Length: 140
Image (cartoon, rainbow, N blue to C red):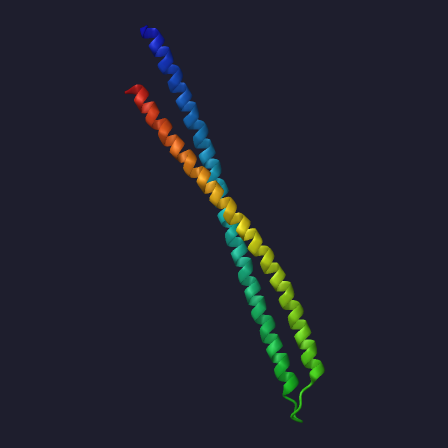
């Protein structure tokens, strides 16, 4: 009976160690994935900042074009120049807006995936804690 008990304990010990090792490997994989997602989210945020800067540049150019078109020496304004500046500005804003929407969708997807990875990470971490506790109970 004594030898049978040792064999059962030894098998249980190996199973817990393998479970802990496999879960630890999964935990490291999840951690790496979390970091990848966080990096991608930061890159998208940086790209959105570039879009904001470009938007400001286009607004400044539009304002300058309007000022030039309305600052005639004769006191009138050049409607063709105003229309051209407006169409150029509207086209640029439409392009920037569509790029920003795509980035927002990608960022939402990344945040959703990050939350799923975090949930799985917490689950695996809890499982490792349970396995360690069981291991100590086998020896104790």
